[in-house]
Image 1: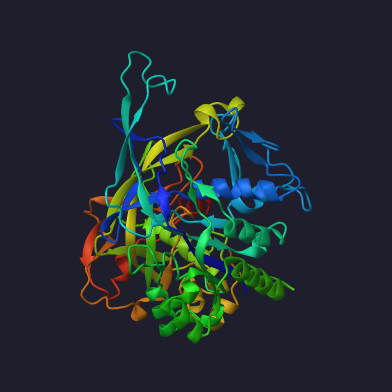
Image 2 (image 1 turned 90 degrees about the vertical axis):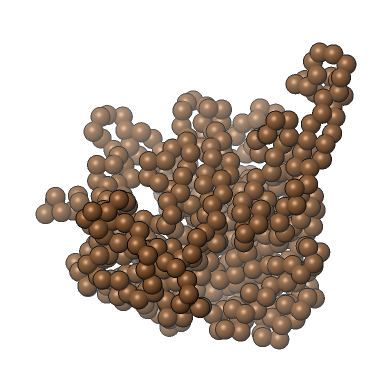
Length: 302
Length: 222
């Protein structure tokens, strides 16, 4: 048997301006996709993983293998060759263990195969999607002459610019098979990092969206399929949460209620109450739910 | 033959030759489907179920979007991973609300000693069978970010009768090729199947029209 931890997470309500360097004219755009027939904004899994790595670096005495250097705008590496993975009991870093790595080298001779050091991420993260459609909100602003090195080098006119923004929540999922970790206690650290995730997807460091969970649904199971991804909905434009599809799946028997641990805002909603009645472990706090999952995993592993 | 209903909230079935612009195929190739099935049953030897036949069909019409992604590559080894020229933004096509039907037939498999892939997949869909499986990782059809959400036996799929399916089936006069075996180092060992996307229903297709998983290098060695 193998135990998997799946989770679906939804953030608090906030205003996002998650620009990734793409502009249309002088308007910084949001990443968007069509979701259930309407335009929604989205944040990549890489952005969430980036912040998770920062959190892991702060939690570990030895830090992480890879660290983003804000001054040089480059990645600093402690062991770029991923030493330690080749031998049993070798020293390894928590970020390589949880988030994986790949270092490929081309063949040195014609006709010979190249080599690659690859470790698949044990903590897998999905793309985040806004809970509500994007209504097209854009702010228009003006930078005063000389306000930035790139704007208005000449003349006295202010420079107008725009930024697409979205007042919403984001939801995304994770998956983890704790048995695959080199050090088993890193599963708990990963869950703690996700439960305390902070600023993800910044617009040049000026505007950052808090990705800490407002509600979280964990499933600890032998089932390889999560069956809870993007399960959150909202009856009132993002102010409150629902999880009707999750309730349906539990009622249909596709998800055992006993496998679910739920925390946060969902607890006091109709969906949360229905799931509690069906037998899920529903808690009001994110920390309490995360701890319950850690305890459950520790009990099974023992 | 066994049929599965599979949902993937966000997916990208990357074309093998896509580089700067990561276009998506309308549905996963047989080689991707085979990898997904191996992952489901915890099989890490990809040659274990050579000879299996499998294909995917896409239900309805998933929405298509394009996003900008930061992608790593190696242009300058001295700069370090993810630095300078070793990272660049590229566009990627995404499909959302992807629902698939997957057909698998194991009647021509060469190594039934551990049980056929069809038997193992069928077992993994039961609570008892699941308990006996050792496996790892989220299920995906391509990138691990694009996680599969639900897998059900086709008989238990909700309300499919009125839906349209486009299924990839072998056809000698077809207009579409998809890989049944991918050589990740170079491409000389990659093998494609010629077929076309056919309108279908949820009845099992003719076995002979399912693409067969074959490793050309193994055939040569014999």
